Amino acid sequence: MINKQFVESLFDVTGKAAVITGATGALGKAIAVGYGLAGMKVFVTGRSDDKCQTLCRELAAQDIECGYSVGDPAVEADVIKVVKDAVAKFGEINVLVTAAGCNKPQPIIEQGLAEWQRIMSSDVQGTWLFCKYVGQQMIVQGKGGKVILVSSARSKNGMAGYTGYCTAKAGIDLMAHSGL
Image 1 (cartoon, rainbow, N blue to C red):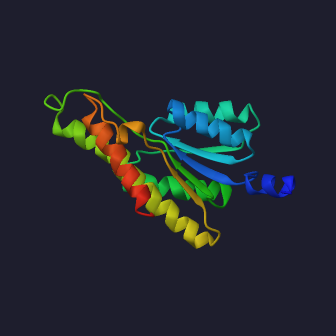
Image 2 (cartoon, rainbow, N blue to C red):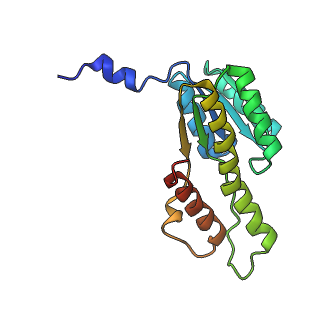
């Protein structure tokens, strides 16, 4: 017979610290709330100071410990700052969730190179940068950690007008398969 307390201990996240990118979006916010309600300390990041502040107030109103730092996931200096701020706030990072991303649906023949690059930078480069710097922090901590890369069914099943988005999500899938 399996011991219930042992099983519960395997899934206990109480007191662990998570960094959630794209937390000002619907999916990132839901993850932040869910983790917080499960007992995690959540450090959220996004491009909008107002949205990050609002989210932390909402989380605090639910007795969820929260911190935030504003930054663009595609800018290396911003990512480094977010990681440093998260460690300063909670002392460590146990979980990374990369929910940041963007899209502008349009046919490929109408999509400009700048828009393509914006999607690739935010989705793929941003994910890579956070994995790199949070991964380095987790190694320094010496306790391992969890990295959750948010992708989409569109990574395998394209959709007309979603060339940049589908390609970016496929890149994130392959990044995960590469073993980080």
